[in-house]
Image (cartoon, rainbow, N blue to C red; front, side, top):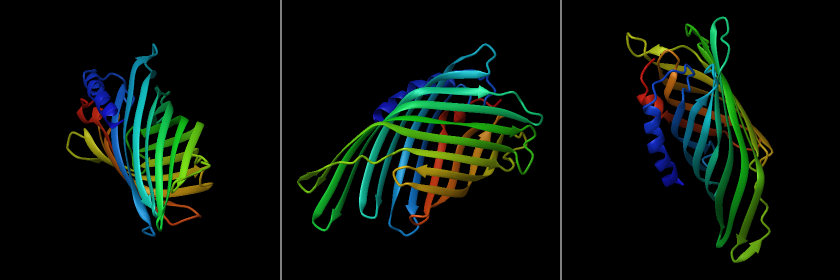
Length: 286
């Protein structure tokens, strides 16, 4: 999967960088996103990492240039060892991406985006209990959706320079699992990967990195709620983030965040994330 994503990144990034940017939408006519994350329970029971690549290529638009749509591709790998359970999963998704430039408000510009995809997830897990070994393999075919809205104050006035509201949900269309205890085959019960997440971010004020006001840092406060059907648990988080952006329309280059997650069934989970948009990294300022 890693090789497939890498081979797709090269030609698509070349295409994106050759586009003369005309659309005012902060997500532009395409994105090539890569990122990493790290998470660990506060009781030091283990930790995990994830990495991803995402491509959004939107070459088509309506006559008014207020809506663009095209291809969505994603790949994710997760590895963790928590409370003695070793987990590894990979997923690949393909679908449709859409950007919307909405009617401006009195003091703000407004934008929205949507991704829908069919995803295939393959995961393995194992745990030793003394000399005994438990192992499982699971495959999920899933329907995935995420989207959001962005409100940008025209003069980026503190303390509410810009706001994002985002949703994410996924549900399984088909799941199968095989499990073994040593040499014995068990009746595999698939883990339910259905989940729902809503997240809100408030960008406080731009910190300009030069007299031209082209490039700036945007610190933000992040709040999120996640429900996971498999755990039958709700997670709440309040964290902080900072984003490097440039241009009049706030094209985001690099973002980092820390988000502690709290839930009733276990210890706090500390989560660190970093995301890079390779298209915006080389995009001409506008």
